[in-house]
Image 1 (cartoon, rainbow, N blue to C red):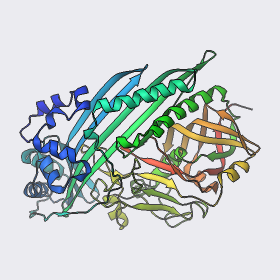
Image 2 (cartoon, one colour):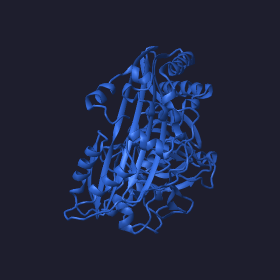
Image 3 (cartoon, rainbow, N blue to C red):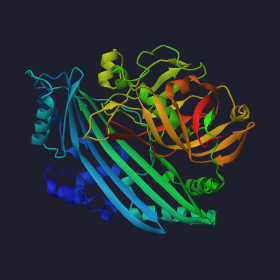
Image 4 (spheres, rainbow, N blue to C red):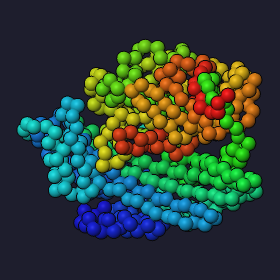
Length: 515
């Protein structure tokens, strides 16, 4: 980006709407930026320096300013994020818009206290002013010399063939039209479809006062399909979506076909759905997206900030048993092309596969820099932030349970009366105690060891740590969720995924109809 661009022109260009969705946004039409964005994930460090209009000397000066009041550490987080969204409703494309975020966030740490400031104007003057604001978390004076900067090498967990910046709107619309046609061809009861095509790309550059420099190119694609159907005056609605750190090549004819078929299947199944009797019963969690219960009811309690502050029920459970010995839970940033994967975390730390529970024993929390220093361990690469406007905090990435010793059919056959929960929505969790409520969007009754009628309008109510202890069977059929999950915490949202093998919980309260 040219550093001479005015704030007014930046804002005007960010509102170009359809034009921005179809081509490179107007405010980025510089020769350097065009060349940069066409490289996709082939960019090098100097490309990032050129793109953000910085040099090693400027970065050193900003770091010096940030630590001028006696801060222990600082980092600079540069981000350029381009978001495009197209929607089809009532068989016609009726919306398309873009959003552009560009700026730098500057964080200063003094002990466990954080000073944070950001600016959307990346000039030496603006960055030094933001650094001065963040520096005020400390209250002494310190002269800091230039920091020698060194590039950290990072892996590539989400290779793609075509950067989204090279995909114009006219290449996306046919996907929406194909899905729409397939949806209506599936079932005559379908009366409406709503299809959304979303993609974004983030270019990030992270520089720390310890001299570490990291950069990353982060793509994301998602198609979601919502279907309404009517039968004998009764209407039902359901949806299905696919998402990941992928390019447009992910949306193959097979995935297009699957999006339409699964969205319709889930919707029309609700016409035959019943409400189970309320009460405590065995619950089988289906492999895949029912891992949201694992994420919400258990995963948040293992984020280190909640434990450092003694909020989580797991705060005193390190190296203690929390589940049966065939239960192992990881949070993993390294799954290829999965939505929650990251090559480097938002503090510039290397990412990893973190074993939170290993053979039933709680082994680790998810750490950012602050909690790692408190617990005297290494960061787990879990420091994440929504954007340059936000400071990082310990967050999940891809949270899942490893396969166990049982079979899916064996698990279902072991249940005399219970429910099979296939997908969830509208969950609510209280992190401290681990209490949760989830709405089961799709599932089935289990009667005498067999899946029978579909169910709907069902809540399950329980306690995460207790459910963890009540897991009595784990199958060998691990699946990762494929949908567009975004995790919220303290006002920030970040992309995540989760996974689960088929799992049997011996007892959970099910809210259905009274006997």
